[in-house]
Image (tube, one colour):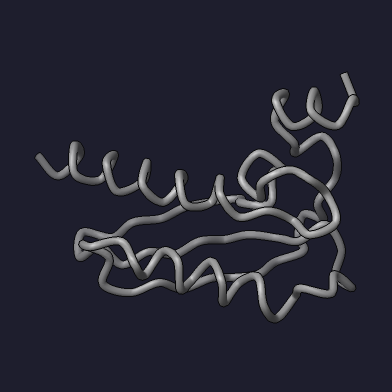
Length: 106
């Protein structure tokens, strides 16, 4: 039962992430490979470990807050914590095949 609810919640989170776009690259942040990990506790507390394309990214303050607010809007979510890391640094290899295709990199 927990596994089923967990998967449903994770899918809802991914769906939200696929609707948030990097302002400089016309690809969503999930397919772009900016999301390193999504952790969901038994109490539906969410921890997302993510990066940006560059430490100098102009949305370093606003993007994590946007993600947090949108994920908090999911009915069963209790708490959201976004952890920004640059280790490992983002590179084009992190992008999904779909993202590379869209950007003409395949």
